Length: 272
Image (tube, one colour):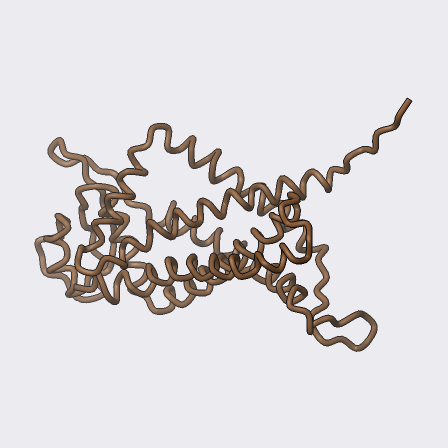
C-alpha cells in the first residue's frame, strides 16, 4: 500500500492567508478608486463619489456582504499574519556578525518592508474601521416623513457655499470656525463625502492616512508577487523578475488613488 504524506496545517494556512490577501487587494482597489472620486473630477463637488457610495449602499444584504466578503477575509489574513510576524526574522540590517546581514539584496529588503508595513496596517486598519464605521459614521434620522443622514462636523467658511450645492441642511444660526455643528445630508453618499472632507481637512490626519495608504500599496503588491509564487504561477527566476515591474505599477496606481483622495478632496475639490 502506498503512503501519503500528511499536509501540514501551516502549509494550508499559508495558502489561505495568501488567497485572502489576494481578495483584499481587489477590495483595496475598489475602495481607493471610490474614494478618489471625491477629488479627481475637479468641479463636480464629489458627485462621482456620492453616486458610487449610494450604489454600494443600495446593495441587498449589504451587511452580510461586508461581513463575509470583507470582514472574514480581513480577520483571517490579519490573524495568520500577526502570528507570522512574531516568527519573522529580518536579515536586512547590519549585525554584529552573530547573524547574517543580506541588506544588499533587494528581495531581502522587500521581505523586511513587508513585515514593517504589516505593523502599520494592523494599527491603521483598526483605527480606520473604528473611525469610519463607528465614531464618525452618519446617523440615519427621520424628519417630517423624510429620511436624512446626520453628520457632526466642524464649521468652516467653505461649507456656506458647498452645502447648498450638495443639498445639505446646516443650522440656521451662523456658526464660528471650528465649532462642531450637526448637518443633515439628503443621502448616505453625501453624508459620507462630508465625513471624508472632514477627515482630510486635518493636516495630521492627512499625513497619517498618507503613510497608511503607501504602506497598504506596497504590502498589497509585494504580497501579490509572493501570491503568484505561492500558487505556482511564477516558477522560474526569469518570470519572477519579469513580474516585478507590474507590481511596481500596481503600487503606483494604488498610491495615486489613495493620495489623490487624501490631498485632493478638501484642498482642491471641496474646500469651497
